[in-house]
Image 1 (cartoon, rainbow, N blue to C red):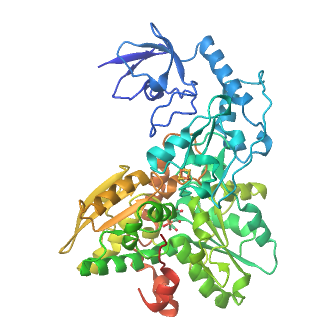
Image 2: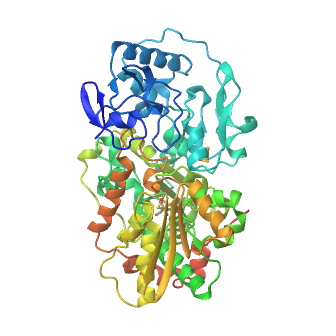
Length: 567
Ligand code: HC1
Ligand code: SF4
């Protein structure tokens, strides 16, 4: 085979796209801000430089591996150059580190520490630029931007939105929405991918922690909380646990200590979504109308469809997302069961997602001037609240979720990964179409990391064609095919974030390479360890349908669980 030599060791070339990836196989993680394996190579931060015999110093992210290369990654010259690059970045960066929301998980800080930068010799005087707080999901702080362009490329290349770009030239260069607009004035869908890739605190999820503390200390309020599927496999990372470790029981204990009165599970509402959405789907399939049916649980996708493919809106499932089904159901039923007034019930969500903050504020999800979901915390914010309270998370004894809205099946848990909604729907559709109870609950053929997965699945006599997509640029491609009559799908699942909710922008910031994979595995394992795997088996749903919803697809179910779209 072909080899390169990295710091004295021979490393085999196995189709790596660039030296940075190949050098990882030597167990060396080169510093970088602007390299992301899913994005185009930009080569702007220059931190990943290496020294190659006969070539000199080059950026490894933009250099192809060639057999026989002799590479050094850690010479005195490289160390010195990297320090200077970092000092220059720091010199143009607002240094309010102690009060920055990104402080504990900032790549700039991490690399400055790692490279031993202890002073900044070229400090420039910086004029403070205004923050963009125009929307419920994200805060943009241009003072902390280091012009790596990661957000610009992620928004364009993965989401196909192009809401932000470089503006001006030279020393005035900045990253911003076009024409000096705010994020709320451009086509931004609040997916937060820009925040996920941002190495500093220049784009971050907009916090609501203070509102939640306030509700918790308000004696008139009864505060309940729902936990999204993806949160349980990621929160532990903020307390030193590996990605993918399921911490549901400890989360319940922590939430009770923080003062929440009831702790419920969004996965209960996901089970509910499965019954409603599958019933809607099979109805359309029988009548042959408005196919394919697109999923509607990802609020960034819904906003994207409203803005970019309004003609497809009739194809979206009319189901509210599980977050909003939970909210309306909680507000409709809990006041009576808890013996309180509706306006004294405060519903909090803990979500992996920034777009969920926007979704909760949409006018269609309010009743009598009160939103169905009062506040949305990200997984990150939840972890911060636990830290603010001084709770020793790892020492907690697990506690059980409250009933009935805390009971779920595995189908409601796998919603958090790409393919999960489809698999959950198939587990119900199978029984509906064959009349046979499912013995092995999996439809593992819909799983996987590919951005677009087309699957034909036979349930009894019915052949279903599914498209499972994540990343909105991929969704756009499928939508165009549908519009052009080039695709005969029955069902299309769309998640904006690559990987699904587990990789949402509200999740803990991770510097590891395999985090998405581990979280994914964590959710599939959680499904396996639960008692039930198909939504129709959830006994509390049956109860809910008879007492409150007038049956699946019933009148009350329609009022509380469905919606329409605006274009
Ligand atoms: Fe998701 Fe969903 S799975 S959208 O990815 O349908 O955010 O986790 O809560 O609502 O259930 C997010 C996750 C989440 C909803 C559900
Ligand atoms: Fe682009 Fe999403 Fe960031 Fe908006 S939130 S700027 S759509 S990446």
